[in-house]
Amino acid sequence: MISIFVHRNGQTEQASSLDRAWLKPASTAFVWVDLAAPSIPESLLLSETFKFHPLSVEDAMSGTQYPKAEAYDGYLYVILHGIDFRAAERGQAFATHDVDFFLGPNYLVTVHDGSSRSIAELRDHCVRNARLLGDGPVVLFHRIVDAMVDHYAPEVEKLEDRLDALEQAIFESTDRSLAKGILTAKRDVASLRRIVAPQRDVISRLARREFVDISTEMSFRFRDVYDHLVRIADDALIFQDRLTGILDAHLSVVSNQLNEVMKVLAVVATIFMPLTLVTGVYGMNMPLPHFPGGDAAQFWWLSGSSAVLVVAMLAAFRRSRWI
Image 1 (tube, helix red, strand yellow):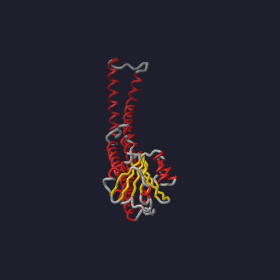
Image 2: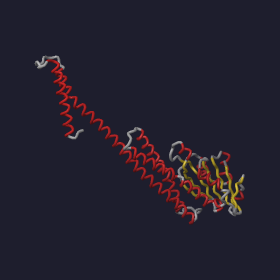
Image 3: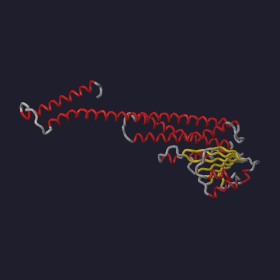
Image 4: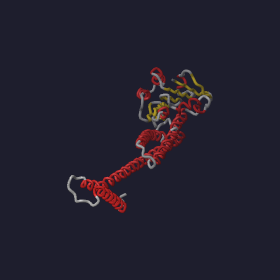
């Protein structure tokens, strides 16, 4: 689907088709073309109308590309990743989708798979708020990128709440699924680091004014976005350290529980060893000295001595702090 917005004479309107005159350097119009899940015929707009380089068009139409910023003749090409909320609703934390930007002197072209909430929000308000596009394509580009980065914050907060719950659960629950939850959170943190780190480098280049399309004023705004990404990257490192500690603590708790079970089993086995010896000797088919009182007295004497032996062994274990 193609959405075309043009700002002229202080007003923004949605156009049904693109006028090539709007793209000329002498034009005073600002144009935003948004391609959401474009088909092959729709993608021809990139190569035939805008005359973008074939390599950048190929990257824009491919599935997933590494975040980057490249200056071509007459435009700036940027790839960033946004949170895929449809995947997040299915439990896939920090699944992302590509958003491709073609930034020219008087136009901005965005290409994505149709799941970008940041672009959808600005697209819905573009006609009602003339300043969104009226301030220029670079400002609109910044607003989209800023919104994409802001959408990371709720997901990061959810992840932090999950870590808090895991830290509390390791001392309150012995559920086997706890280890699975820890490893899932560890995978999500790794995904967060893999997403944020390269984008931080791209925004850093925009903030340093490596490209002529970014003015000094806009570089200051991109520095603010860069600061947000740095903070998220730092949080990801902290989360990774916390998860390492949580996993170590969980393994220690499980090991201690196993040691307690083995200690009880060892005490039981140790107690029954002399009893087995005694009963084995008296159960042998061999002549024994006559016991006063007969077989019944012999049975009760054997049972009593076994009980005394058990109590004595338990007392010795207790005194040695083995139990």
